[in-house]
Image 1: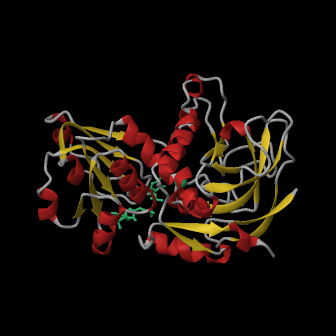
Image 2: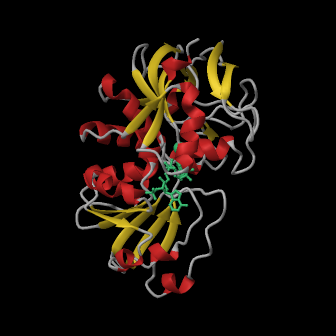
Image 3: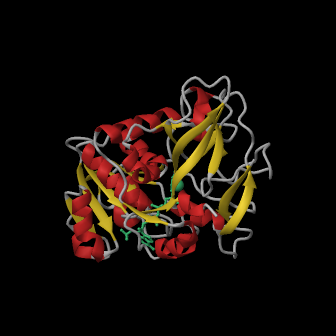
Length: 350
Ligand code: NAP
Ligand code: ZN
């Protein structure tokens, strides 16, 4: 069936309204009427083909929340009317070692991204959540237990939430640990909230003086403006873990120098241009690590949503109409977002 969407026809063209086709729900499918969709910096990277390989038309969007409007015969976990979410994946092979271990994001046969991934459905690649409706295999649908009035602010948890929750858990953020979060945008502001809720001592690193007070309100115990060398030097050799969410190429040595012996700097930002090569001696002489992390598996995404519901955690969002997406992209590029744009999909009607 046809559904309204916003997407781009080329890397240098703005997003425009378009009609796209969604499959009729199969036995294991859940059809979702989308209420809200967050705008991730990955959407911008992808729609502008900053990572190359973007297939057009490109309909971005992988921070999807809405209500179930139909289910296939074999679906038992969801009913029409349920509040649900969909994140960055809509399928995976389900039989490789990673899938069996619940790490669908590391599927050895390649997971199916919510957009820009090959699929049997028209037009041959997946189309994301900047649209009124989506049909997804039930194994990739998440239950939302937050109140309906919080739904817009829950949307960013589906990517920004899980992408910060997963590494914070993996590297054991918690009481007695000093944790840094670099870049206070969509991902970073969730990282601050989550690391605080896990009980860590949280230091926010920002390039924006204007975010100093905000970062404290988000849950940071300390805030460092990373452009200021004296402020940075005061934290040398002191961190157990630093999560770097910056969406642009930058000097990593400034942050590895802040790690304790055996500390880890984990990168989740995927900038268009590579970071300068890090100083190896800074790693060798304190057995420090630089690591990466990719979203999280489906079970862990549900765990994160439940953790957030239990702890009263949602994103700080600025709700926009669909026709404001281009303006939101421009502001996101200038780091001028507090802290996640979310599209009110109701504005796509007519
Ligand atoms: P965002 O909202 O634009 O936030 C990025 C933040 O990085 C900015 O708010 C800014 O924070 C800081 N920043 C931006 N440009 C900078 C520069 N030139 N130098 C230093 N700091 C800069 O982006 P996002 O949606 O959080 O996404 C962040 C990155 O993560 C993107 O590259 C995205 O593609 C990637 N991502 C990865 C995964 C994964 O699974 N690994 C998942 C989702 C997204 P301050 O103003 O505080 O400095
Ligand atoms: Zn994302």
